[in-house]
Each structure stands twice: as structure tokens, then as C-alpha cells.
Length: 464
Image 1: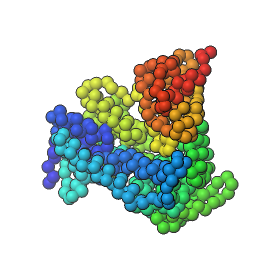
Image 2: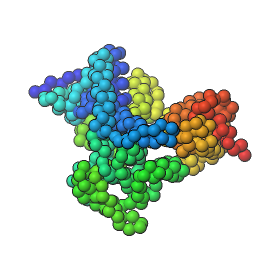
Image 3: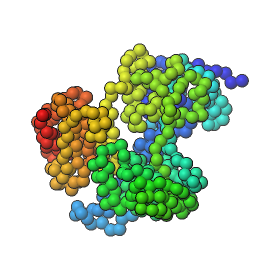
Image 4: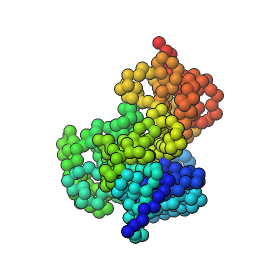
């Protein structure tokens, strides 16, 4: 009979917020265990954020090298060695594993590698990866199980050995022709990356444009960037059938307004969204309720519907970014101490790491329209930012939304070099409720991309 082990805090899943909580509480003297089925540091350092940005950077170096003559550097034939690309990425992952193992050791939190399933409230049965079973119970429980790639029910897709982003980042070759299902953030990033490595790329998007959550001008600009690099994009496509095997020969039959097409390629990547990892972990035994989409129901302090149970990150319906999981950690840590920190009033930025990158914080124009918020909009082409005269990085624009009734900044979008860094300036101003006029009249360093904020904000229409 397996004896029950009692803990102060039991955490299922080792994603960013969960592991930070574990390390922090353990250092405070609490008995804490984290149960993780596969990745020591969670998906971000192992198969998602860091690995993808690592390979995106390798692809950017390849692209710059191939176009070096534009800047006066003459090179010979350029080709990508994918084994070296993968090796560089894996070296980073290995260093991250060492870092995480050391962090668990130093904090005193226990990392348990195994698959956990709730068998009773606050009680987890863990089938250990190296054999055996443990039964754990926690005075407080945190669910931090993340999400996984959604694979649609399309005839032939299940048998096609299709990739998700996880398998795509493990390739030690670049496909001759990779077909990508889905034109969202992951699909767009991976499309540009593999095109720059040397693959022919086709994106199949069921809607009328890429990145449908963004404003139309954002979608159009990103599409222009991809098409200019030789990526084929098919819109309004209903996928009817998949045949063959990814990694060898695969074909996708699509129905479009112009008729039926068959796209033939070598590899197939599915990037059609994500679903939470809340199925088959025994939540029905805990009193934890799910919403209609399978996410854990939580209040503004990330408390679940069961007593002393919390949820962090994507499984709780939080925006799917690592930096949001970090803030979830702060909220839960504060709430466990009786505080009132909330997820309802936070300002969440994000970056899509294409080249040029897309960065946004606050409202978009379409958001403001849906919410009925009157705004003043100013827009500046990147070609009007003086730094681009030196770097030739003229693609994209900056756009700002200003409240029509006062001078507060409501949103900012940028497609352009160093977009994420420029956005941080706007985010800081928004957090501090600084009126746009203060930024408009600030002295910016010449030549920086942030210098463009001056002329951008100078274009804001006066209040009527």
C-alpha cells in the first residue's frame, strides 16, 4: 500500500509560474513538491519560447548573411547546416535544465518526475517516470499544467505523422517544402524561420487573412513581408484531406473560393491553436470546475472552485505568454498570504518574433471599436524613423491610440526593428498614467528606434 505524503504546497506542472512559486515558498520554509511529467523546467525553456527564438535567431543570421552584399560584405555560397542549428539550440536547452535542477536543489523544493492524477480533493497519485507510485496531498494545491497544440479532425491528418512546433524544433534538416496549417503567431514565426533556412513554405489559412486577432494593417504588412521572402499563402481554405507522411511526401487538399487545390510538400506542420491540458488528470475528483473550452474556472485571484486550489498560466485561461505566467505567480503568492492582487487590471504586452517583429500593448483599433471607446489614432511609417536611414530597416510602422476625452495612451502597435524594446517605453508610460504629451515632448537619443516616438506622437489629432 502506498503511504500518503503530506505537503504544505503541491504543484502539478513545472511551468514558469509554478516553479517560481515552488522555489519561493520552499525558501520560506514550506514543504513544497512539483510534479512534472516530462520537461524539467516546463515547456518554455525546453520546447517552446526559448528554443523557438533560438532557431529564429539562427534563421535571421542566415538571412543577413545571404543578403550581406546589400551592406557591402561579399560572401560565397551560403547554406544552413541544420545539425549545427539544432546543436546550438540543444546546448541552450541543456544549460536551462542544469539551471533548473540547481534552482530546485538550492530552494529545497522537490521536483518529482512523473504523471500525476487527482484521486481525491488536494490528493495526487503520481506514476513515476523511473517506476513506482507516490501519493501526495497538499494543504494548498496549484494546477499549472499548460496547454498543447490543437490538431483538427481532418481526414488523413492523424495518420500523417504531422508535426507541431515541438517536432519542428527537433529537425536536423530543413524540409524541401513545409506546409503549415494555420496563419497565427506560431505558424507565421515558423514559416519565416524555415523559409530563411532554405525551405519552400506554404501557409494554409482558413480565414481571409493572417493573424486575425490583429488590425487589418498589421495582417497586411506581415503578409507582405512573408510573400516578399517567397512564402506562399493560401487564404479562405477549407482543408478536406491530408495524404502521405510528413518527413517524406505529403499532400493537402483544400477547397478555396477559386476551386480545389492540392498542395504537395515534404513536411507538414500543424499550428491551428492550443487547448488546455486539463483532461484526464482527475479534476472530476477535486471539485475543480472547467469552463466550456476546458479551462479551469478561476476568480480574479486565480482561485479555482475547490477550496485551497489555485491555477496558473494557460490552463487557467491566462494569455498564453510566459511573462503572464510570471505575473500569475505573483498573484497566487499574494493571495496565499491574504492579499488582493488581481489579474483583472494588468496591462499585458507581447511580441511576435518575426523579422521585423510585431509588438503590441493595450488596445488595438478593432478592440476600441468593439468596446465603443472613442480614440485618436496616429501612425508613422518606419521609413520616417531616422535610424532606418542608416539600417535600411524600413518595413513596418508605429501606431498609437490616444483617448479622445483625455491624453492617456490606450494602445500601441509596432512592426519594425526592436519593436519590443520600443513598446516597453509606451507600456511604462501607460502603467504610470503619463499623458502622451510628455512622451511627445521628451528628448530621445539619436539614432534610436525609440526616437520615432516623437514624430509619431506629434501626429496625434487634437481633441475635438
